[in-house]
Image (cartoon, rainbow, N blue to C red; front, side):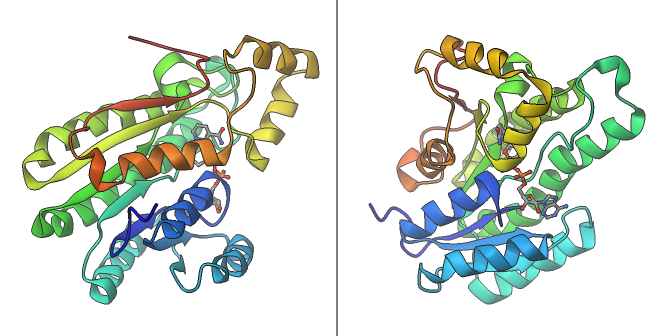
Length: 257
Ligand SMILES: NC(=O)c1ccc[n+]([C@@H]2O[C@H](COP(=O)([O-])OP(=O)(O)OC[C@H]3O[C@@H](n4cnc5c(N)ncnc54)[C@H](O)[C@@H]3O)[C@@H](O)[C@H]2O)c1
């Protein structure tokens, strides 16, 4: 499938983990994928992988905790490519803050809100006028099973931050639908990226982990490819009548009607 020929896609915080899988998937389907990340080592490794896709991936060092860097990077992107068709708001994470609510400090809340919510708000705010001008856009926010059903291993700060992103999605869908822009959330269950593998090993025993997997209807944990495929659908032109939705990608571990 070549659903993204001529399309320019920005995937944030994507030199490793889920975001990298998404950027590679969009590029494999024809997109010019732009990756932002702040980790120089991860950027170097991703550049090596990206070469295999023949120049369809660009990687830039951007620290998304810095509003000025975000705004300058969006301006540079538009100057160079003239458009941003797809924005995948991938940045986020629980930042290894405690699981128990009573152990979470104000600082734990502020940092997790900053990375999961405010960084995405700032990118989205900078990108939307360009999508509006073009009369086309696909925004996919990275939510989580945690933000929809609660979490077995991350704290209330992360759960609330992802819930906020899922609600943010609805309002973008409302306000920008008339301009040809859709906005949806993907809500993955635990996906075994190196970070999550470490966190699960630390917070769950092997027996607990086995019991959880046995309770998932499809009897396995999710993969980066599972998430990338769901995002590629929502980011494609053919998903134009789907907006304001949250798509669970959790093997049926949590379901709602
Ligand atoms: N992995 C999972 O199980 C899972 C499940 C549900 C949702 N999610 C969400 O998916 C997204 C990606 O998760 P992941 O596990 O791949 O993440 P990750 O922790 O592996 O991080 C991905 C990248 O983010 C970059 N990054 C961090 N802070 C940055 C900053 N300030 N500026 C620029 N880059 C920065 C890191 O350098 C890293 O390369 C997050 O929003 C996460 O909450 C993950």
